[in-house]
Length: 203
Image 1: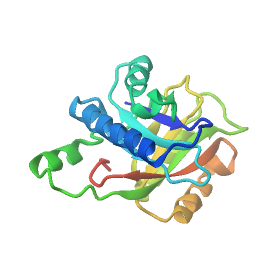
Image 2: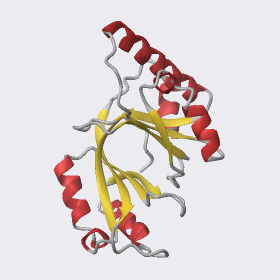
Image 3: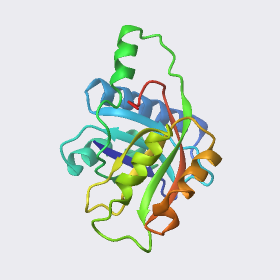
């Protein structure tokens, strides 16, 4: 899976009508990608200030394929967002339960809610071959904190992406700060709030 995050460039103001047109087209594209089997999950970020507008968790065979698909989104075509693509080794089953439930009952509510999300960068004491990412994910999952997590490919500048249960952001930050790898400067966290539908994540 290849999560594709939309980083927001400087942009001119839009009229209300133009903004609504782009947003409607954006949502239609999300549903089409899901129907085509290319999208496992998607949702906006809710950060202040906003640096990333949202994430697509895509099913793709390469970063190039993921970027080609993501570049067709109306927010990108209209130069409202740019695309960063990162190869994420996420857990199997993202989106499966969501699509099963909504196929059985198309009127089922989305159940949108906020999930703390963490991107791990290498810290000043990062060394290749460290097991810090795996150990941190195991510890947080064992504590019941996560709904999905996994490392990024070895050549990626990011080291891991973790999606938390719907817990307060302060609780997520506290759990991250207690990780030995964070205390030791091996991993450096970047905190976000990610909105997702219910029944999307497998853990």
